[in-house]
Length: 69
Image 1 (cartoon, rainbow, N blue to C red):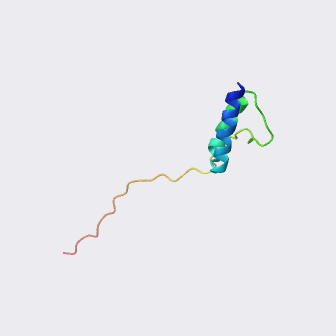
Image 2: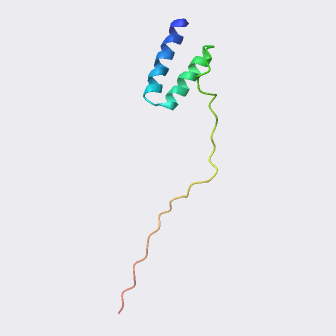
Image 3: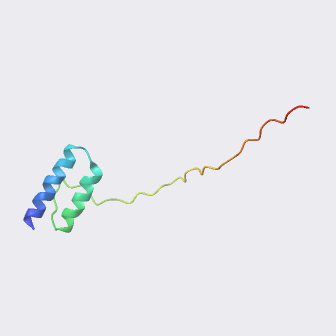
């Protein structure tokens, strides 16, 4: 188990250096599952929700100008 924790810590350090926060969070979650916790680890992931619904695209055919006779 110790080897796996050390490997995850090395992987996490690489992600921190390359500025990949999503991957750091996933490694932190794996470390927590193994029972490892540290003050520098990211907090528990929070669920984000959207407050505004995006506009729906609609297909609209523009009518051409009528020809004058």
